[in-house]
Length: 426
Image (tube, rainbow, N blue to C red; front, side, top):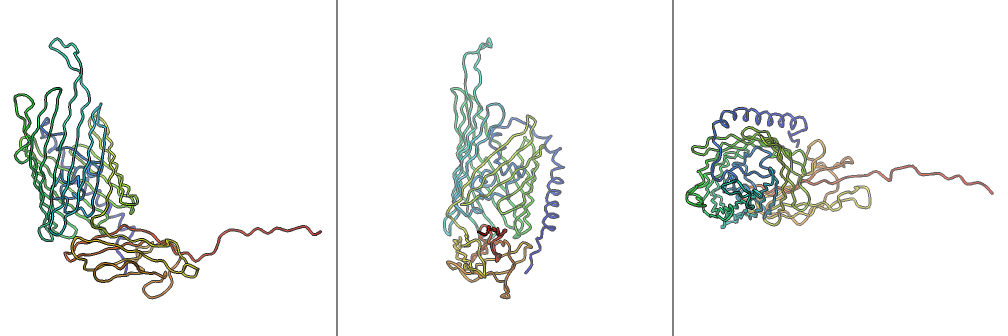
């Protein structure tokens, strides 16, 4: 079995993804120029993480992590592990924005739940009197508390809702308000996901002194196309707020390596980009940057996934010799799926992306399988590094894929020169 996603094809597809992203973004200039500034809640509606800013903020149909509920409350149906997400960013002058988010995947009868807290601190300002004399200092800050729930409705549709409470404080004045967000995800095809959401339903409205300011309704819709076996995607999003204009976002993401993802996007009038680094034990580091009228902004995020639904495999030892003392390696397997497991497979792939050995079966995988370094025909394989991955499919057709890892075959003996010492005869 030979996969079609060879290096050349990957490069052409990645180039196509970038091209589609730029073409989609090219039409955003007129839309962006029509919008009005200063809408209540702009700090929250334009919030972006290091990952989302990398794809231009086009996340309503991607939404595959707890913080994604800010774009689409149905996001938790695409979360397979318990995830903690934290991020901090310094914007312009003394303005900072910090967030923490936690989400759990849905169960058979229970929806997925999430909690997100985002705090904006605009720094310290001088307080002056009517004569413009400085009389002291004051601060301004806003905090959003978002409680989310998401549930799948059949195999293709998912629904979700947020309840959010916003608190704002300027000097000695403070106010709080509550609102609701609703969203949906539709998996039109295995490679195409459509997302839509309506944010700020019925508020929140905040009254600091005499006049109430209500967050405007925010309509968002978009689509995501995944290809190269899920390693690449192109995503777009349109967001619209009555009386405040329409925005078009577009971006692309490419999994260049099991540990590295690259991104490029366009958001209103500015280009953006970023990368993610997946480390061991479910840790991921995100970086994103975006151009802006006031300069370039940088964001860093950290997430940690644990428990939940997963597929894990580990070769022990990771280097072995079929003709040596350690002639086989053992793949330790473990998995947990949302619905009952239907089948599992563990594929060993060479450097040409050709599957050289495949283990599979019904239900959950066994505790371990042994591999003697031979292919499907029983022929010994060449020395080198091979990639393997465990994939489990449940009875509802969902795939739970483990992390790609490597194992090495070596039959060569010790390398190097053997020194010859010539002694003098007595």
